[in-house]
Length: 348
Image 1 (cartoon, one colour):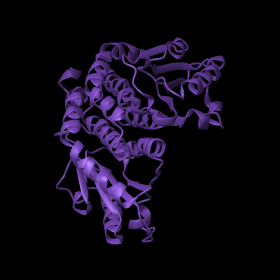
Image 2 (image 1 turned 180 degrees about the vertical axis):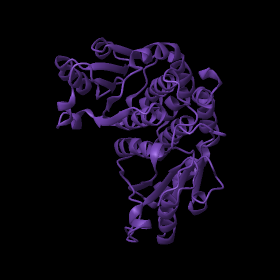
Image 3 (image 1 turned 60 degrees about the horizontal axis):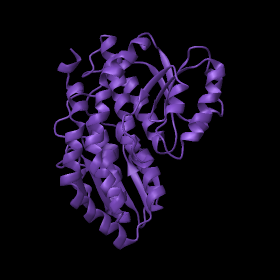
């Protein structure tokens, strides 16, 4: 029974994790925000791998749009292999890691600390090596995450980033929206039976693409990762804009395309994208709260609550997590222990 797995329990634990993060970590994040303002920091470098890297992609959009900050992802091999780290200057170097153990991410924070940059870490292991090099340590408050595929730590990372952005900007309207998110995630989890039925159609799917844009570019990467590690499907994530610059050629009759399209400023772009898929007879799966784009899909995964676009990655990944979990179960794969993977991956 899928309900007996760690993965199922961890997916459904997300509302309570997010409640704890918002309640307990707001003040530590506020202290970090005050220090960012005090130092007039306008550049952020994020060190992360895997799922946490996808949280970093989200931070690029949110901190860029809401705080006008320049945000980039670190290149850890410059620190560990080439031994040619960049000069950080007046920069926030933010490590994001569930375990805080990967040596390459630790090396980035260690060098940043040596150079005198402001360092902070989002982690589920506050006593980790990574945390030891941080001026500010934010606890993801996820408790034990046993399943190899990260779920509750990912949405916790997203909410920590939202809190940081709102507190840097001292934006009370954003903070009010954030308080609603645990309840909205709870309502979104009610899609479980709908998603479970939908995946029956894809039991033998061997390849697909996942498309998002803007804030949900990160969601496309995270959903693709979950499908790869849990269902062993060959999946590629794309921006809808990038997909039109060549990859569109792979689309043929029945080729599955998952489109993440919550309402917001990007919805018109994504509607235009879907109109280019239909004449090619693609198999279109849409995650959205927008009726028009849902009607263009063969499979419609309707988000039950509309949220601001900047907050939507927290909810739009939920049906994706459920989709990957149920497809793994349908294929009789162990969702807690994907082949060849371990919970903590250490790279250099």
